[in-house]
Image (cartoon, rainbow, N blue to C red; front, side):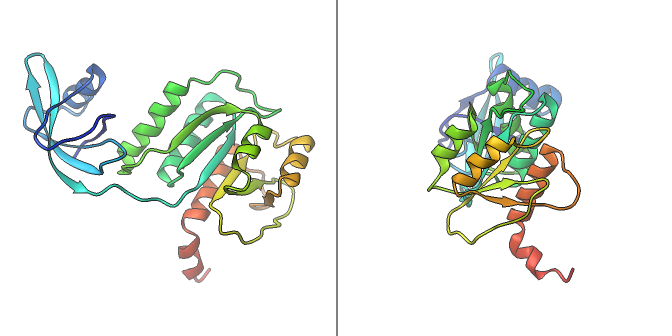
Length: 234
C-alpha cells in the first residue's frame, strides 16, 4: 500500500486536500484510482488508512482509522560535514532508514559543497520515511560551523567523532549519541583539537579509509543493532 507524508492534522472522515505533486504521484506514478487505500502520516498521529477521493478536478484523502500509533524513537544525531551533492543525499536517505532522529549539517574546513538546497534535502528525508515505513520525521538542521554544533550539543548528547587514522577511546555515557562525520580528507588538526577539547571521544571503524557516506551508514548501523550484534557468534 502506498504511504504518503502529509503535513496536516488528521481527523476521521474529514477530507485532506492533496497538493498537485502528491496527486500526480498517487494517480500517475502509483496509478491509484478513486476509492483505493493509502496510508498517510504526519509525524505526530501515527499511520492512518485513508481512501483516495476526487473532488471535481482535485484529489483528497479521507482518513478512516489509525492502523499504527506514533513511533517513539531513541534519540540519535548524525552531524555530517557537507560533502558532494549526491553522496550527501545518499547519506541522509540511509541515515533516515537507520533511525537517526536529528541531522546536523556542518560547514567543515575541508567541505567542498558551498550551496545546500535545504528544501530538497528535507524532501529526501521525507521520501525515505515514506519508503521505509517510518512515521516520525528526523529534524534537519541548516549548516553551521563545527564549533557552533559542538556548543549546541555538548552536555545534551554523547559526542563521538570518527577518526580514520586514530584509535577508539570510547567511554560509557547515559546520553544519546551524536556521531560527527568529517568531509573528504577528514577533519583538520584544528577541528580534531576542538572535538577533543569538547570531551568528544574518537571512534576508529577499521583499517580501511571509509568515504563520509559509508562511515555515516556504518556508525549508525552499529549503533542501531548494537544489542543484536552482541548475540552473534562472530
